[in-house]
Length: 295
Image: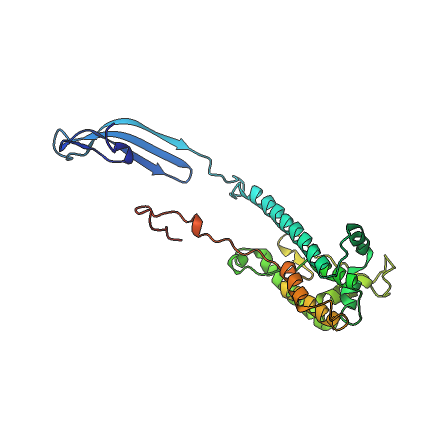
């Protein structure tokens, strides 16, 4: 093999004279790769010119699995991608929770000692979230209420994926139902609504089996395509509640709940990872590597 034949050149020239070359041919399929290697040179008959295929040196086909489940034709990567996404969400939640605790400690809304932080877990967060709107809470009680907001921050729409996700439609219906329930029960915030369900008819949180109590967890009810959420909060609802709690409690603790503390806590509580820029992942053009491929 001479000169640049490895770069798919059909022939090379030596002293102005064309000599034998090698041609590589590939056929790329979705789950196959066909190839052929030809020796090329001047056609003895003169019919096909100076770059005619003379001998077939090697050819073959390599078949690959298409990477799909034969039953439902879904990509096999789905079973890996879904658990990976769950792990990433969990890792981000744990990191945000730790950062939020640090922000609350710096703001004076949580004790720095981890043992004291554990003791605060005994406080009913639903009662604190509802009571923070009307009465003065102690600083650590305010921190406990804000920390609980981070447990379920509500749904934030991603318009690029909404159309492809059927659950987004279920969430939209449940969010509308929740707004109607808030108006019907005169609840100012989502936390007040949860406290109404949590306390039951007896209004006595010490009664564990109060018949009037309703679940506060967000779960799908039903089976299959007919499964629906009873209610589902949006991120805007949680943000509204945070602002309402901070505004009400700042009247009782003006030197503690400052604007700087508000911004520091809110920055962590509502931190959202943006979409990654894809510019670096776009390959070069097929004919000119200096130009980017069309997206």
